[in-house]
Image (cartoon, rainbow, N blue to C red):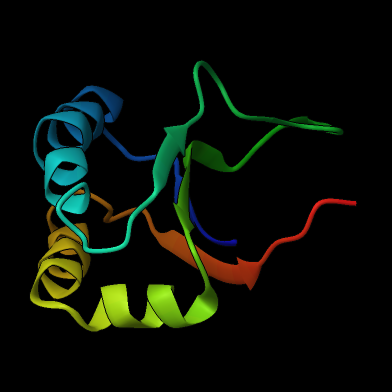
Length: 102
């Protein structure tokens, strides 16, 4: 299993961000080939020290790192990546890694 984590920083207009994210970006992302799961935080994002710089955290699951690379290179992956500029002006950090159960 492999995961792509998207860490979205607090936007200037949270309502506009959420509207675009859930009405447009999520349906677009769900067309990405090989996507096995899609989770987002439910409520505020906190850190062990208190407040977090993140408004939204998304966890996208794939079968492998190779599957993520294929997905990102697909037309659907490219369209989803291009959409980031439409709502994530505050910034987004993307992390990709293999996972294992311990």
